[in-house]
Length: 72
Length: 370
Image 1 (spheres, each protein chain N blue to C red):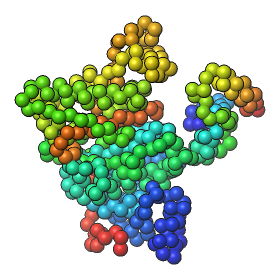
Image 2 (image 1 turned 90 degrees about the vertical axis):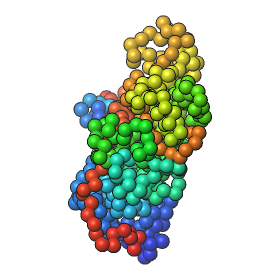
Image 3 (image 1 turned 180 degrees about the vertical axis):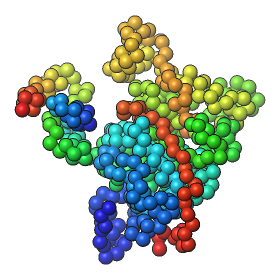
Image 4 (image 1 turned 45 degrees about the vertical axis):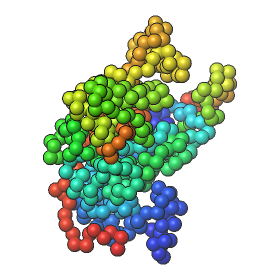
C-alpha cells in the first residue's frame, strides 16, 4: 500500500494489490496517508505459496480490474 | 487531543478499552491533571513534537507521549527514558511504520545504558530483568507501546498485522548491567561517553534461551559458549537467516560474561567470532526456503546454481549488528533475540540520549494516581 501511495504521489498511475485479510489495513494506510481513494484491487488470501496454477488464475481474474484502473 | 467524559474512573477505563486505546490491561486514567504533571516532569513544552509515528502518522508531542506514560503507570522519574525511546523509534532508519504494520512479531526492545538506569526509577538489569515485577522496566516499555498504539495507530488485525505478536509487545525494556560487565557500556559503542545515558532500540523477537554450562578448568570453554550462541543466532526459522543483514541481540548472564572475561575477549572480539560462526549451509537453505535463498543469492550477485550445498552462508555480514551486553541473574542461560530484518532501512538499530538535566522537581509529583 505504501509503495502504491508513494508512486501515486509522484503522478504515476498505480494500483495496489491487497489480499482480503489485509483489506482493512489497506483502508487504514490509505486514510492515514491522506489518499483514501488510492486504487486497490482485492486478491484472495493467501496468494503466496498457493502454486503456479492458482496464481495464474488469480492474475487472470484481477488483470481486467488493474487495466481498468490504469486506463481510467 | 480530544478529551473524554466519564462519570467515574471505572467508566473511563471501559471507554478506553472500547476505543482500543489500551493494550488490553487496565491503565491509569490520563486525567488532564496527571498528564500536565507528567509533561512537567519531562521538562519540555507539551506541544514539542518528538517525531511522527506511523502508520497513523500521528505527531508524538510531549503531551501525547506523557499521556501514554501516565496510562502505562510511569512515575515522573521514568519520563526522560520514555521521551528518549520515542525520539529513537521516530528516526526514519527504524522503519517504525513498516514495523508496526508487518506480519512479523517484532517489538522494540529498549536497552537503557548509563546513569539513567539508576536515577530514572531504578531500571532492573539483574534477575528477571525482562520479566514481571520491575516497575520501571514494565512501565517505560509499556509507555512506548501505548504511544505506538495511540499515536502510531497500531491496532491488531487492522493496522498492526503481526500474525501472533509476542509478550514483549506489552513491554520490552532492560538495563545493561554495566557495573559487573566485562564490556564497556553498550552506549559507548554508539559514540556516547560513559557518563552519558542513552537508550538503544532494536526491533526484536522474544528472547530465545540459550543453555551453556562452562568449565573453569577447561581453557576451551569459551569455544562452546560462542558456538552455542552462534547456533541459536543461525536458527533456521528466524528472519535473520532468510533475509539476512538484520540485527541480533545477545544478552549474556554474569556467568557467561565471566567466561568471556577469563578468555580475554573484548566485545568486538565476541561480535566478530559470533558473526563468523553463525552460519547456515546452502543445502539447508535450498531445502527449507528455495525462493528466499534464490532471491538472497541474486541480490548478492551470485549464481545460486554454482554454489555447492555444503558451502556456508553467514547470517550477518556486519558484526556491529550484534548488540552484545550483560544483564540477568547468575546461571546457565544467555538470551538471543533475532530480529525482523525488513523495511527500507532493514529496521536499523537506533539510539537517543536520555536527557537527565531537563526534568524538574515538583512537589507531590510522585503520586500520579491521586
